[in-house]
Image (cartoon, rainbow, N blue to C red; front, side, top):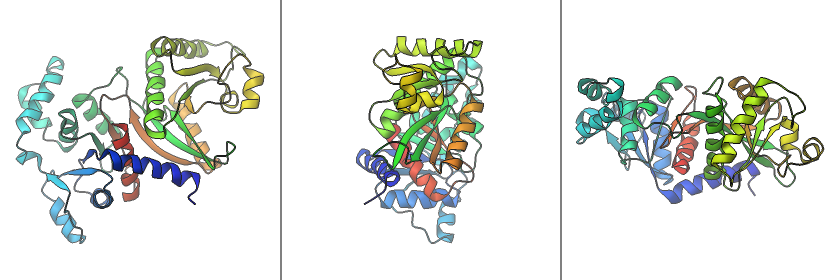
Length: 333
């Protein structure tokens, strides 16, 4: 029997197989991308498009005895609808001063080209970052696809061992851990709603969202707590059916016995599965501490809040990391 970690990962993989979405990988000149594309195609995880920016994809595959059968390869300069992609980008950015010539040039860049395939419906999601920086990946996504509530953030899917009774690995969404350093009230609210949506799509089940702080239900007073409460108020107004509460200290959010003592009036204290951190310092430190001290599995960072799925990779990622992120990108669509 598989352990809880593998069961959840397999659930995501199986969902991706059933969806049969098309995922574009813009960095087609990196061997890790080719290996992941080959495995994803063989396993029918998703339909894969590889972007061959400089014409090196076929030779790289040949050097590594790798078949590209069943994988669509596109060279931006030879794409039949390249003028359409440039027009879509120009329409999105002309109010910001982009010219027609700039749109034509930028739409041929592999990151922008891949995102424009998603924007125009030729693919369901895009995955990059094995070669390019997070900043470049996010910028291309904002130019080509845009953000739902004006905020792009990220989350980690944390699989924590032996934490809750009956679960060998308990799934949590931690956010934001990688993009927004000091969120405004509006951004904080957008991060919470995006994280709840991510939990539904990737993990399944009901999200229970906790706004975290160094205070539980007024045990301390500070302007930062006021900002957290203001963000939570916005979420409750916008999403009245979403289970959301705070402010909570971490223990009151995830341990029922402590939650009942510190927040007796809350109907979800101690039961949270989506943790919203007050800033990037807290989120990034906590996910790394949980990963290292608790031997948790950290999947991410996974981008959220965009109108369509675009995901980022660590430049140190493996082909297997890319394979799993193909599935997560697919189920996020």
